[in-house]
Image (cartoon, rainbow, N blue to C red; front, side, top):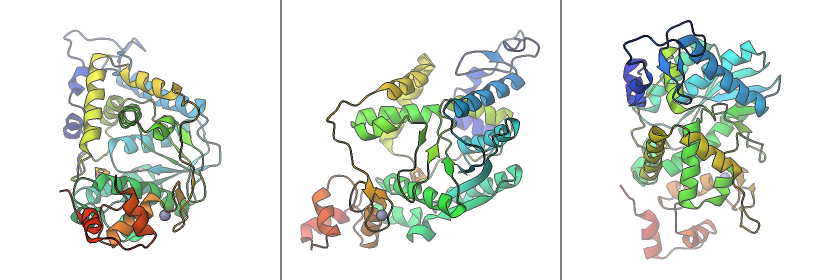
Length: 366
Ligand code: SF4
Ligand code: ZN
């Protein structure tokens, strides 16, 4: 676990840019009384600690109110990983729920992917957060849900497609945890940088279906087994989340996953950070562009149905999770990944594969 200065510098290399370097004290541009301790990355305003906290929290509150994210009496599960975003989300949700009497019952839901040296440590942070915020916590694990940990999956599939397995399994795991806890909604710690990055990724991949829905601040329930989700930090800049966690001295975990994120997303992230350093409003501008895109009539969109095997939402006969699991259990790690659609169909309809087809689905990229 790391919290405080070290993690801060790891999270935000240009952090010092937002701390005062001036010799003359600068007054807070909001209260004009106290000394400014930072320059807001989002607006460029010099603020004291108290005014920054207030501005940050009020913006999240405005986001929640404007999008009508919650109704009084609802039970809300906060997806908690122990990282900075979900820790700030849990802190701010608890604070706003009390400050503005939202009338919500809050809980923490964590997913244990089974990554030794990463998730086991970050879950310790979540357990401390549970004590600090006095919220109930439910941990669902890949091992108990799927019979596979990410450590075992990486051993079988290698390091090229591991995040595909992890992402697909996590989505379903969170829903299953939410259903166990009987929550009405899940809120996730996705921030403005995440949303802008996803818009860019979907443009670069030509994924129109995802591009159309990736900026939505909330999703309605798409069927049984799918709990509505929302993103209260959708307009919060990552740098401000880091500053907020730092000045509030929140206890969070900031080590990268040992099975590091895929390279393509990394390029999109670096590109976005470069744009932000030249023009901070780039992040909001990309989100704004994504929100206002409209897809012309006639573009084929997937039709949502349910998985024949597990009943989870799916546009195919079997959901992605069941296809990937089938591949793992049969020692065919490429099943469900990328281009071999014809072979996937063949396997799933129980037709025998030729030797060379089998070889294709067995090959692993380390
Ligand atoms: Fe899972 Fe990949 Fe994220 Fe690691 S980096 S937690 S493997 S999605
Ligand atoms: Zn399924």
